[in-house]
Length: 157
Image (cartoon, rainbow, N blue to C red; front, side, top):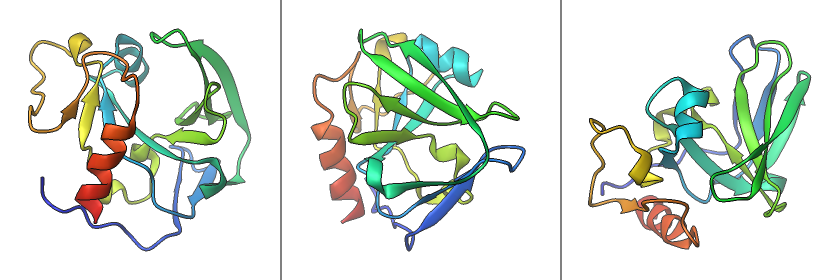
C-alpha cells in the first residue's frame, strides 16, 4: 500500500446542514470499510467507512445531537450519534469500548486523507464490490481490530 499522508491536526467536520460540528485533535487508529447489511442500509450504498479514535480526541463543537442504540451483528450495542436537524450520522460509540468513538470520515471537511486500509464484514459485501485482497480483510466482525490498527500505522509511518 502507498504511504498515506496525515493532515496537521486538529481537523474538523460536520453534518450536511452545518448545524453539528466537531474537531478531531489527533490521528485516528485506522480507517476501514464495513460491508455489513446494516451499514449498507444506513448509507444507502455498498458500505460505510469507519475511523476509530480515542474518545478524548473528539470535541463536539456545536449543534444538537440525537442518538439511538443499535444492536450490531456482532451482538454488541453501538450508540449512533447524528445531527438532530438533518440526521447526518457523525460517529458512533461502541458501548463495549467506552474509551473510543468511531467517526464517519465522509463527514470530515477534507476527507481526502482518510484512505481505507481494510474491510470488515466482506461476506456481506454486494457481489459486484471489489475487495482488495492485499488489504486487511475480515469476513465478519474482527475478533481484534489490532491488525487494522497495525496496517494503518504502517501506511501512515
